[in-house]
Figure 1 (cartoon, helix red, strand yellow):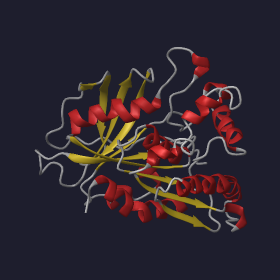
Figure 2 (cartoon, rainbow, N blue to C red):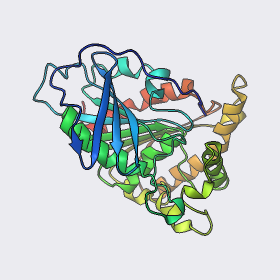
Figure 3 (spheres, rainbow, N blue to C red):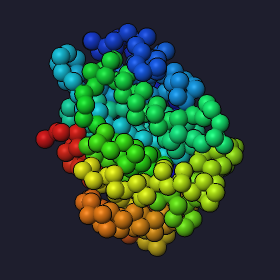
Figure 4 (cartoon, one colour):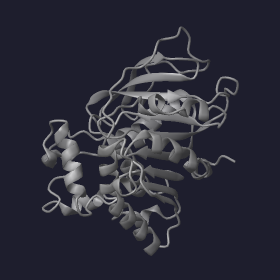
Length: 315
């Protein structure tokens, strides 16, 4: 999984017209700082009570934002992968240019160092970080106040962000019109997946049990966070799922990424089989080869755009 942690860009002098004051407050979350990178892109620092920390969020405005001050805009969430950060989508893709004329407000929130956007168990103690509530509820409240966000939402993510996209849609039925996963962990209790998730947590020097507890002793909690176990709640959401076979198809320029992609192959099939059993339609792209890497996710995002646009209510 991508490990680069890069900073943001330069600061320009003036934000677009009609931006609300930086002290906007919504549902307990507060924007404590903002840095405009260009006329459409701003980095916010948001103090989140549910996470218990201040987190960075990148927002990209549609090109027509300033010229249409009375309009509200549908919101597209783009979620980071593991061991990466909120800048990954703009660093690794041309998403800013691609979405320029698409009449959508795009938001890229931090999911913390592991990139798993969930409500952590933390041994059942109070004050465990809740990235899910931060992203789904707190952040949306701020976007409504500060950037005229409308009611239509879609969510997409890579790797652990792909998990987040489908988990959000399943755990908050009707909130997202569309959800897309690119090489995501979609059946968290499938063979080998608890080991993968525990390794992600441990790599950030956190105890693995702080995520959702033991996959055996706390199985109910794992199932509550498992997109596959919660798949029945995805009915009515437009879905896009992509996954490569990895090493079997041979991206030998990225051996580690190909191996990891292959590890996720079987559980992705289990998830789509679960959708089939529930008679829930999805656009599915299983492809030979590939790696757990941005060159594949870039093309999958563009392939999924019609699905996301439909969920956002865009023509």
